[in-house]
Image (cartoon, rainbow, N blue to C red):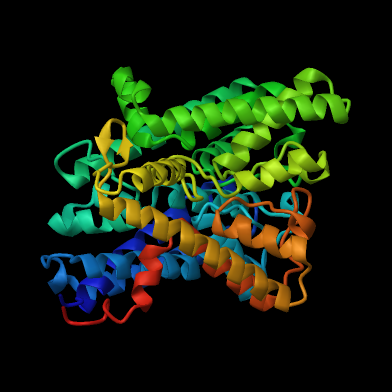
Length: 484
């Protein structure tokens, strides 16, 4: 199977042209708030659009060629890297973030919906830059490549390869026979929920600018806020609204589509959703009792802070309403454990994903039964359907590689003289695309003090986590580059 470099370049040009158009959406905010930085934002957008369009134009003879599976993996990985490089331009040209390393870290954190930041004074940034920061997360939430598949038939039948590589869940449901129709419907749900949250936040007397930014970053499970103290400054009503939409964003968008179609049977029969909901309820109940009895918090506040942080970390959103690193040790340990769970497959959430844990646990329990009946064929079942052996192997391999990368990354950061708690917290939150971690990168801190090499390591981990490991790692195998 050949790799079609011209096809890859053609699609990368298209993606970056789209990326530049998104940059230009920041101009109205800069102009309305009378910020001089509108000129630099305009320049950044034009550079990105022109560069992307030029690449697309000069490779236009490749537009009718089919995108192979190999091409799909390379397009997604290089696409993520290229849009992140161009995405640094608004920060660099306006001087909001003067160094390329920091700008790349912030941009990669945005597109991967991680929410880790190097900014020490978020509220001092111009509104145009703040909006770009939020927009990167909203773009990355559903994936700019899925967007391209949804609105541009130029990718043709090869679009399925991009969709699978971009959102490599366990068994992606195709809502419609054509992948373009599937992506369009997913984006319909995504945009619709974003608009609904925006209206509800406005109803809670949040400002127009704050409401639109937090709607973008909530539905992306990204967690970038326009406030230095994140969600802690907002009213209980606003926090509850954000909790609801973080939970919805961490739910499979396929199920959200079925809910809109009033097909609730699909939701009630979905094992991953039932585990996801049960896990949220049980963990919230446990930590609420811990805070109520050990921290002397009023019950409603203990419940709200707990529910907010449990949903925020479980869905890998990363908003903060309370400094969970200062909670009782057992509560903090539970929060750290949640960083390895993740949301549902087919959502904007990062992490390992609930469905992988469900399959792993089921397979492990059945392995005990197989020991007693070695000749019996006992398949793992999910939603009353047998899980094929390749999928079970994929889950085991994914979790094993995830833990290996977590361990290796933690050791690498420690070698840079970063303390142990900060190392494991930074790696866990970057690989899981969560945002705040533990140690000196906790809920009230940021990543500005991490050494330069450490920031590049964490940026790579963010991309690995967002693309679910295999999409990137496969490029470093000899059989990917073979002719067969």
